[in-house]
Length: 299
Ligand SMILES: Nc1nc2c(c(=O)[nH]1)N[C@H]1C(S)=C(S)[C@@H](COP(=O)(O)O)O[C@H]1N2
Ligand SMILES: [Mo]
Image 1 (cartoon, rainbow, N blue to C red):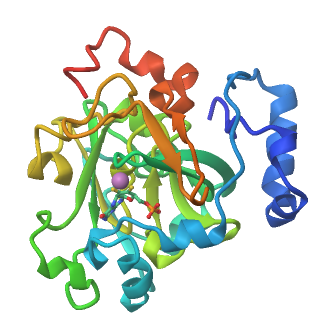
Image 2 (tube, rainbow, N blue to C red):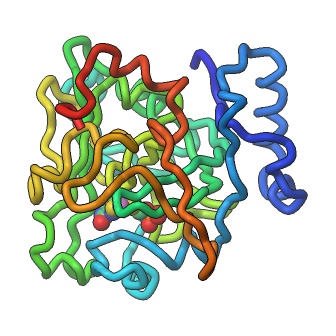
C-alpha cells in the first residue's frame, strides 16, 4: 500500500482512554506519519468520536427492522460463526474464504472516520479493520474488472426484517474498482477495539467514508468483481433519490430534503446543525477519482 492510516486525527482529539484502546495501531500510525508524506487536510479536524452507546444503539440495518432501535433489539439472533465470504467473478482465485482465515492475513488498524447518513445525521466512529484493497489483492483482481459488487447475508430465520418488502433482498451494493481499491475504503471488523457488534454489521462490513452511509453494506457474504455497474438496493427501490455514486455532496440535495447540513448524533437537545463537507471532508483524498464528472448527474 502506498500509504496507510490517514484519518486526519490530531493528538488533541485522542483521549487517554482511546489511546489505551489501540496503542499498537496508534503507534504504527504515528510512526507512519513521520516517514510518509502527509495527505491530511489541516483545515478539517476529526471531532470527538461518538460513544459506544450511540454507535451501537442508533442503527440502520433493515434486515432487523426499520426503526433505529430495531437492530440493537434483534441482531442478537444472528449467527456469525462460522462465516465465509464468497469472492467470485473476475478474480484469479475465486472461492469461499473463511472469515478467520481472512482476518489472520490482514493488517488490522484503527481508523476514526466521520460517517454521514443520507438522512442528514452523522457520527464519528473509531473503526478497527483492514483495507478492502488487501482483500481484493488476496483474491487477485483480473484486468478488465471495473466494479465490485457486495451482498449481505439473506437468512430469514435470523433476520426478522426480511419478511417486509421495504427493499428487495438480499441487500446489495457496489463500488467502482478504483473506489474499492482506495486506501480510505475499509472492511470494518471492530469498533473501539472490540469485535464489531451484530447491529453494526458483524463480522465484516464495508466503510466508505466519503459516501452516504447506505453504501457501507453490512454482514457481507459475497464480493463479485465485474465489468458492469452492479445494481444497488437503494437505487433499485428509489432510483430518483439514490444514485450509484452516492458521494456526500452538500450541493446536491436529496429530492425530499437538503444535504447541506447535518446533526451529529449524541449532542442532545441543544445539538446544532453543522455544515456538511464535500466528500464528507475527504475531498483532498478522493476528489481526483471524479475529475471531469458531472456530480449532479452522477450523484
Ligand atoms: N445490509 C445492510 N447494510 C446497511 C444497511 C441496511 O439496512 N442493511 N443500512 C445502511 C445505512 S442507511 C446506514 S446509515 C449504515 C448504518 O451503519 P451503523 O448502523 O453502523 O451506523 O449502514 C448501512 N448498511
Ligand atoms: Mo443511512
